[in-house]
Image 1 (tube, rainbow, N blue to C red):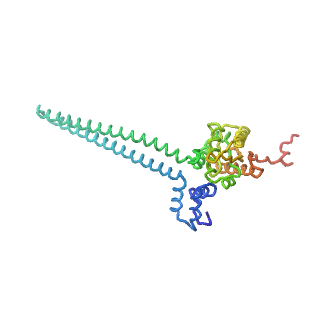
Image 2: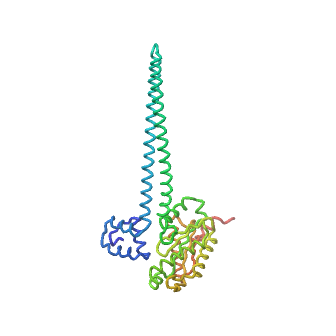
Image 3: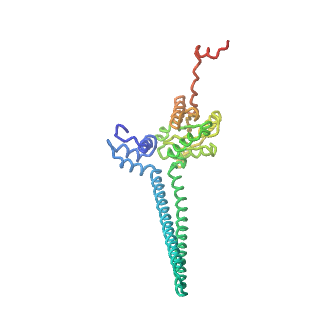
Length: 337
């Protein structure tokens, strides 16, 4: 990115990461054809065309804008009702003041006053009913828009290929993990990567590779408890945020995923050809062993690469920091006479 003169914005990192790790040939071609110092609007256009959640995010923003307009319309209606009631109150005050200031009132004058008050009251009631009806209609529209907004929001955080959570949702959940001190105590991150995936793409083609990723996603959903947050963080990489378990239990969970993948049968439904065996390398880090979300991901990712370097198809736990041994001077501090 630096060589091409691309600004270090999160959405640009996401775009280049997806091009580097993914199987979208059209995206890769567009990135390679950019040349030096591409304009940001060109990069954003590529993102809109190739990253499905970018378009979905724009739908979220559109729905949010519509809700804001509807709320403003309701506020305008309420302001009109307020002005109407203030006018009616002023009319009553003026009328009652006029009656009190007259030394004598004729029957004819009283009838005129009553007619005016009745007319003003009817108009105010009618106006109030119209406002109430309009607000009720706006409330129904707002409820519908709210439901759409929730749907669009979920879509914007869903990976279109696997229907798992995407990286945007993953980063949001990681930040939430470190926002809760209790969650940190028994929180953990597992990073998993399909072994030799480039070979799979080269041998069977990218469409088959995509279907294998989909099969892995289904396998993960079946293998992991429902309360585990599962995300596809890019290409052939997945991440699982676990809460409420000890390190030993998290390691068992990761081993279950490894075994389930190893035992899985991956057959191309179009050709009937067996694309296996397929395995995954996994890395585990407890939240208490990291200083924050970025550090947790970095350490779990390094543990995963240690699994790769150690021969693949295995689980590696991020090593605990070694306690510094007491020096002779330190030991003497605790020596009893």
